[in-house]
Length: 269
Image (cartoon, rainbow, N blue to C red; front, top):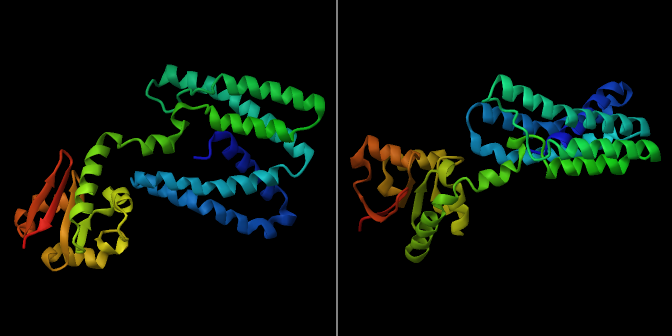
């Protein structure tokens, strides 16, 4: 999520820490900065794709380990050379995968040509002037703005816009709740509708949900009329599935609003 070249620079910092064993003890706590990324990789492996956005927590590790790699002129020169070599090799790797496996994941991005050319020019300029800090920083910035791989390009923005088609329906649901909310709890699947919870502007304690509030959630699943006055469901969420399994479960609620993907229910009086 921090783009390929800065991430590579951070990896160089890790290798430098391991190489300078005399300072390993004092720098060992810095490895804790990588834990958020490892947790998110595990979450992705188990299918919790929406946690992808939290990988930006890797940025402190990138910054700190990258700075360790810049501790000497020789390290700066080697780091810049390695980044240029990697940037120059990835387009060829993308071409190879395109020939051998058209469905391969290494698809060349907008920086596949510009970044290697810029990297080579920056490296030659740095060798002439014997100054490597600014060329290295410029190459990292170019690597973030012109990603080498297509699927690397602004993944957070892509994820944010993924559900843009459903936004008008979501706004309709929120407006209805704001006009008619009576202070009673709202049952909602936080895994599917967390953005709606936050955008409504109500206190989170007004909701009964299934992530971090399992006790009330389980009680609501047993007898919803005792705990919640509203149910907000979306196609494929846990509440909709429960209604499909047992249609009588929500018999005490009337349909207040229906859109193509959302259904809002209100407790009958």
